[in-house]
Image 1: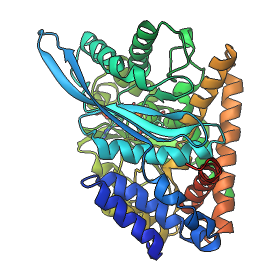
Image 2: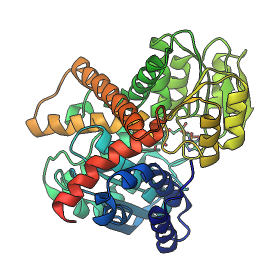
Image 3: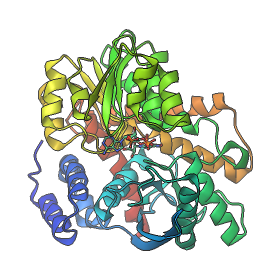
Length: 447
Ligand code: NDP
C-alpha cells in the first residue's frame, strides 16, 4: 500500500516538518494516513472538518525533570514524558515506559497508536502515553522506588481518574505501579483509580496481568478461525520474555500450540521440545535475570546472542512481543521462507513498513498491534469500572469480557476491511474502525 492521496500526503509532510527527528511518530502516522485514503475518498466530511489535521497534533505534551538519589548518595537526573494525545472519547489512557531508548518521538508514536487501540476496545478511553529514559537494569529496589516517587511528584498534577489514567508498559509492572500509586496517594491524600495495573489488595483487577498476552491469543485465534485455521498443533515463536510474552505463551499453549522460542534484549533461546514457561517465569519474574539462564534448567536447549535470529526459526505463527520495529523486511522474508503464515503483534508497531509489505506480498495473516494487543488496555478499562463501583470482579468474569472484546475487535477490523474494499487487510480495518469513532466524536465536540 502507498500513500498517494494528495490531501493526506500534505498532512504527512506537515507531521514530518513540525515534528523533526521523531521517526517512530512519522512511521505510525503514515500507516494510519495510508489506511484512511478510502475513508476520505468516500466521505468528504473527514477532509472538510480538518479532523485529521487535529488528530495528528497531541492535545498536550509534558516533559519534565526527574531527579533522584542513587544508592551512593549521588543525584541522578532523567527526563519524564506524558503525551496527552486525544480525549475525544474518554480520559487519556495509556502506559508508562521506562527504557533508555525513550524519547519524545517514541512516546508520541505510542500515544498516537493508543488513540485508535482504545477506540477499538469499545470502552470510553482517550489516548495517551508516557515514560522516562530511566534504565531500571541493575538498579536496586530502593533506587527504583525513589525514581518512581520522584517521577510521580511531577506527574501527579497532570493526571486524575477523570483526566488521565496511566498504566504499565516496558519495565513498568506491578512493582513500579505500586510505588507510583503510593506517591500519588500521599501527595493528593486521595485513594483514587488514577493508575491501572495496581496490586490486587489496592484496587487492581484480576486478569490485568494476563490481559495483553491472553488478549493477543484471543484476537489471533479469531483471525485464524476466520481463515480456516487455529492455534491447535501449530509451532509458535514469541519474542520477548516480559509481561506480554509470558502470558501469550501461556494462552497459546492452552489453545494447543507449541512455543519453541523466546528472547530478551541480549539473545534468544530455542527449545524444540517447547519452552518451559515455569522456568521462564522463575528467571524473569522472580530472579529478574537474563534468559540465558534457561540453559541451567534445560541444558539441551540452544541460546544465541542477539535477538534478530529468533525470526529465522521455522514456525507457523509469530507473536512479536518485545519492542517496536523488531521485525524488519529481512526478518519478515525469513519468516515467510520458513512457512510462517501468521504474524500477530503483541508489541506496539512490531513490524517495519518493509516487513508489512512482505506479509501482504506472501498473503500472510497479519494482526496489527493496535487491534491484537488491545486486551491490556481493555482490562485496564475494566479495572477503572471496578474502581468506580468500588467492587472487584472474578477472574472468570474479567476473562470472559476480555474474550468478548477481542472477538468484537477482530470482527470490527474484518468488517471495515471489507467495507472499504481491502478484505483481509486487518491493519487498514483496525485503523479505519478506530478512527471513525474518534473522528465523529471530535467533529461533534468541535475540537
Ligand atoms: P516488559 O518490560 O515486561 O518486557 C519486555 C520484553 O521485551 C523483555 O523481555 C525485554 O528484554 C524485551 N525487550 C525490550 N526492549 C527490547 C529491545 N530493544 N530489543 C529486544 N528485546 C527488548 O514489557 P511488556 O511485556 O509489558 O511490553 C512488551 C511490548 O508489548 C511493548 O512493545 C509494549 O509497548 C507492548 N504492550 C504492552 C502492554 C502491557 O499491558 N504490558 C499492552 C500493550 C502493548 P530485557 O528484559 O532484556 O529488557
